[in-house]
Length: 367
Image (cartoon, rainbow, N blue to C red; front, side):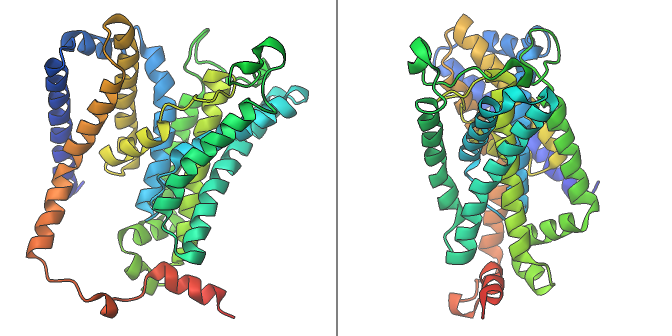
């Protein structure tokens, strides 16, 4: 491990400590019980470990989706929408043909449908960027409410329960044989935890030991250099968006099959943006994601417990996450600003090289 990496890790840990301290000051200033909240966090390692692991799995998967997008030079801010559509596709398969299938086959089909649906949403945004130059930052954000509307239409229409339960804004209960197995009896933590850790391991091997991973790292670090070095930038960008969207769709499947057991209108409490936060706080490191996701899961479960027992508003957890993002990324912003001040002036736009994605796309579609 190089000195630069050690310095970056130390600065992020320092930023994390500052963010937690600032969060404690906010709690004190708003008249909330700081000691009680700290005890609730501690319970997340013991009595409430089940709840911590329940949040750990989706946060880790969403963090992986964010890391893949950002490390590969794709700004996928539509993870929430992809989670919504992944959950919708999984529910449609489960309630449509799931009862007639063997449980293992049914679960596999539900998960596959969720991955394909999430990848399709991200793929549409990627194609809009490649063909028309529309920034994926905008299109992925626009997709979030559109995908949420699709869920609403499904649970109030074709998937709505029959009879008196038809106005609950949630679907029928998914057949029990398609539920993800729990880690313990009556536990909210399911095999999604093991699945998330397996995905992390696969992605780590992908970046470290494969040619595609090397292409992704080059494109994410320096698109112009990778383009002139012969890296297929269009393919790398499209692959990053598809994989990122597919993993986000997987989050939706694990929520529906593992925890909710039905498709509900507001089942997603912002896991997509929390995943982006996990990715950023972890410095886009696949290994660091595990620790950061566990920390955020601790905060989530502590927020739930504290809201019931101490009357602490759940929005306070969002404030804490925002402060942690600011403090852990402050050193990056400061270093970037310093380089801008002492660096050379950039070339005029007219003299800049063509955007690699635009150039390669034009060559691909040329007659």
